Amino acid sequence: MATAASHAYAMLTPFVPLDGHECFRARTLEDVSQKVSSVLGATCIRAERQRDQEAQVNRFSLPGSQLWYCSYGAPISLNFTETEFLRVQFHHAGVGTTHLGRQRIAITMTQACLSSGIATVDFGQDYRQVVWRVMPEQLVRKLAAMTGKPLTRKLEFANCLDLRSPASLPILQILRCLLSTICHAHLYPSILVLTELEQALIVALLIGSHHNLSGELCRTELCASGLHIRRIEEYIESHAQGPIRIEDLAAISGTSVRSLYRAFRETRGYSPMEFARQRRLARAQALLRDPHSELGVTEVARSSGFTNLSHFSREFSKAFGESPSALLKRKAR
Image (cartoon, rainbow, N blue to C red; front, side):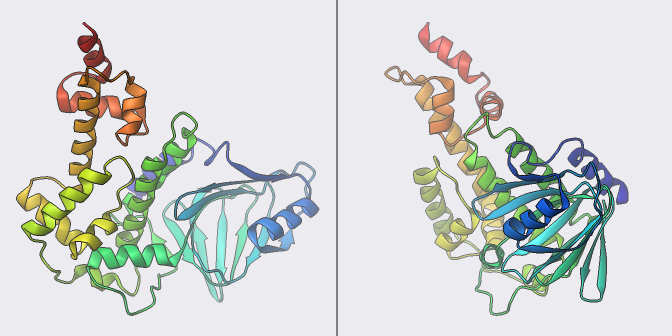
């Protein structure tokens, strides 16, 4: 299992996460202390002054959370106050440790740290980390959709996340995909892709980590009926151009996410999100075939809910046996 986690991290570490989304740089200890206080809300409680120190912090805001990359270029200890959000610390390089009261958690390739209370983070000489900050209401809303019922208890996570577990490996895989998409976000307006990857990361965290409501995910759920499925299909048909959240579909149907997925698989042979992809592709094909339309491939892709042109072309070719550009050429002839 450690090999799988190491392989996922090997894909994560070759590049600087969130490159191009710099929050701040600092070259002196005084500047670092001032920036971490004003930007991160943290206090520098120990630091080693170095001649060639260079701190770099990058930040990217997702629809419902934030991703951070932190590198300080010298040993430093930062104290964080209690926060509203859940912070998930992932290793990127070097040696780092988080102290939660008397608990000491090493941040490694096989272990992440989850916390929202007071924490002290020790950055070794070359320690760099990726931190995901997500608001609890995002997690609660998703968990309620997955279980099909409102939550009556506060969601509390175990502080250690074992990344060697098969259940937690998708967290790293989705994080890698999300960071890579952000890195190339300047090529396409990829808010749709980023929204769905963020939701996938939330689901992966809820399933792959230990928390006090993990048992709720294992209990029997209401079964979605044919009426529920038709209602969802109608909703997807009319909203296929924008982001579609699985918890919204569950709320509309009045069932849980897993029940909805199971019903779609049993009666349709595909998932609700696969149906959404089919409808987007069908819309794109109709626009490309329309003799009165002068839209190019890029415009058709975007108007059909696709933000990555290469991904759109691959999916279109797979579905219809020809590329979008080939269809346009054939229509022109």
